[in-house]
Amino acid sequence: MQGPASAFAGRRAVLATMHGKDRAIVPAFRDILGIDIEVPDDLDTDQLGTFSGEIERAGSMDEVLVAKARLGLKVSGLDLAIASEGSFGPHPQMPFFPVGLEKLVLIDAKSGLVAMEHSVDLTPCYASWETRRMIDIADQIQATGFPDQAMIVRPNNGPRAIVQKGVQTFENLEAAIVQAALVSNDGLAFVQTDMRAHFNPKRMMSIELLAKKFADRLCQTCRSCSAPGWGVKGTEAGLPCSWCGAPTAWILHELMGCFMCDNEASQPRSDGLTEADPAHCPYCNP
Ligand SMILES: [Zn+2]
Ligand SMILES: [Zn+2]
Image 1: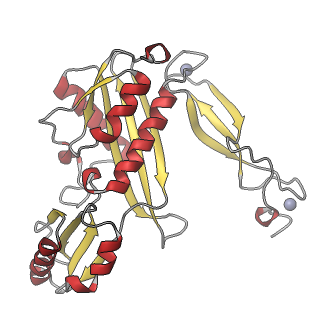
Image 2 (image 1 turned 90 degrees about the vertical axis):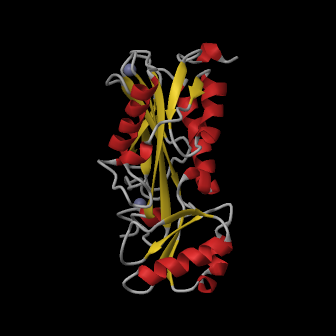
Image 3 (image 1 turned 135 degrees about the horizontal axis):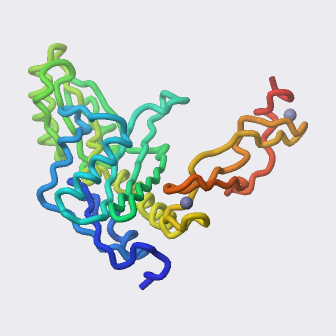
C-alpha cells in the first residue's frame, strides 16, 4: 500500500470511458494513488464526439474532457472521476509529420479540484489513404501493425453514415473498400487507422505512460494550499546562447503551478540544459 503518499487513497473513482482504456489507466491510479476505479457499463461518451466524425465534438478538447468526467460523476453517483481524450493531426510546425495529443483529467467533486495532464506523441499510429483497391495500400496497412491496429473505412466523398469501424481482417477490409468506393462520388474509399484506444495499440501505450505521469503528479502537493497536482503548467523562453549569452527562444525555465490556487514557481529545465545552440541565437545566427 502506498496510501500515505496520496490524498486519494481509499477513494473510489469512475473512469468515463467506452473504449477499454481502463487497461491503460487503472493500474497507475491503483498502484500509485490507491484509487479504486470503476467503469460504468452504460456510459455513452460517443455522444460527446467520435474520431470517425459521425458526431462532431462539442467544444474544445478540454471542454469535452471535463464534460466526459462530469458525465461519469452523474452516472455513477461517485465524487471522483477520471476521463481521457486524444487528438490527432498534422504537427503544427512540421505538417508532414503526424502528432498525437493525449489528455487526462481528474475531477474531485468533494474539493472542487480539476486537475489535468497531457502528453505529446510524435510517432502516433495515425495515417489515412484514398484508394480504389485494397491491394494498392496493403503494404502500408500492414506496416501500421494491422490487424492489431484496426482500420476505419468510409466513402471518400459522399454519405458519411456508411462507416465501417474496427476492421481487423484483410477480407473485411477489402469488402469495406469496395462498398465505400461504390457509393463515393469520386469512386474512392477513405481508409484510416482506427484511433479508438482499444483498436490502436500505440495509443493505448501512450495513455498508459500518461496515466503514470499524471498519478505521480497527483502525489505532489502545493506548498501553499496542499492541493494535489503540483506540477509543470508552462514554460518560459530565454535559454542563453552558448557563444554570446543572449536569450534565445529555447526554454529557460519550467513554470510550476497549482490547480487550486495562484501559487507558482520557476525551476530550471528538468533535462539540465543550461545553454542553447548558437544556431538558434538571434545574434550569432540571424
Ligand atoms: Zn495551491
Ligand atoms: Zn549568440
